[in-house]
Image 1 (cartoon, rainbow, N blue to C red):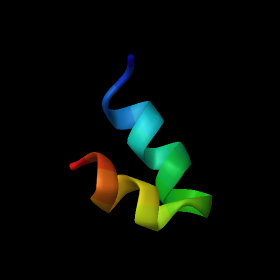
Image 2: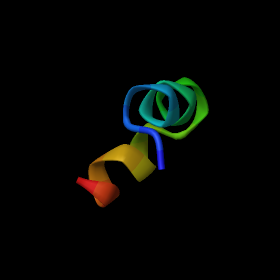
Image 3: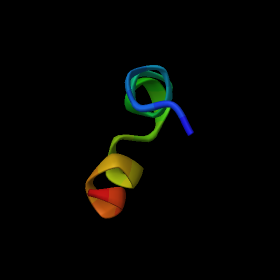
Image 4: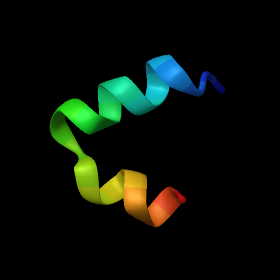
Amino acid sequence: MSDKPDIAEIEKFDKPKLFKAE
């Protein structure tokens, strides 16, 4: 699993997912 690339992609369309994952 990538950190920067993955988060960047999620940030673009799924911000909530980022917060839930963190």
